[in-house]
Image 1 (cartoon, helix red, strand yellow):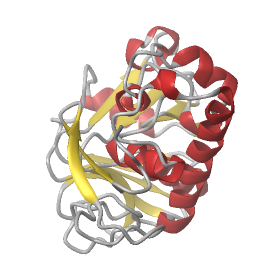
Image 2: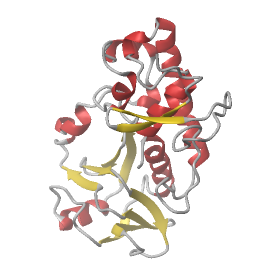
Image 3: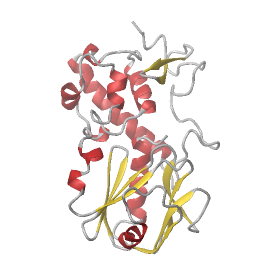
Image 4: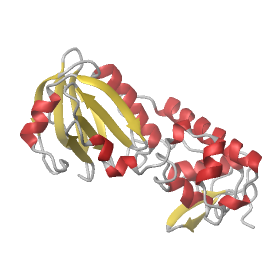
Length: 266
């Protein structure tokens, strides 16, 4: 499932492939991902120049020439890749850009969304406006203000209204790096640890972006994927830090992988 690093890699790719240019051809292969968006209007919008390509949390935000905004949310299996033809397997939407080729929104499970907003609608688009600050730019001071003392740290980190962009994998890896137990509470952190947590979040995200950077990010659930993470999905393997056998538990209904030695639960 894509989290901030995978969406940021996509943004960087799109800046190189598309920013400053317009599509010359558009093919709506499957209109299921379109949300409150007329397919014909989307075709015309994509033929405008992409002025700026941004990201907030797990959302890709494309500012178009006329002031309208294209918002893409990958959810479970969505991704944007560069292809030689417009309808590869799992293609939902394709647009051709000169000197780049076909850009294709692929989504095996058809859960991702594409939404076109009019020029005056973005500032009122609630799913993004109610999100917390972006995790790639978070500070210790912001964390001290945002994290509720009585809440479990892991669930708070995954709450998009607290911090935008972190998911289950990131929360697990960050807490392992911090040597915090999977059920640690926000109020357990010292002032120094809030600063360390902010630094760890940014360092982890930048590390994953560097490791996974490619024209197509391969998600862990795909058969050809490698696991680039230290503890996620590695129950029974040796902790990279101390050698203790890694364990798995449930926190907030989600699997959490941790080291019983490095990350004491009491």
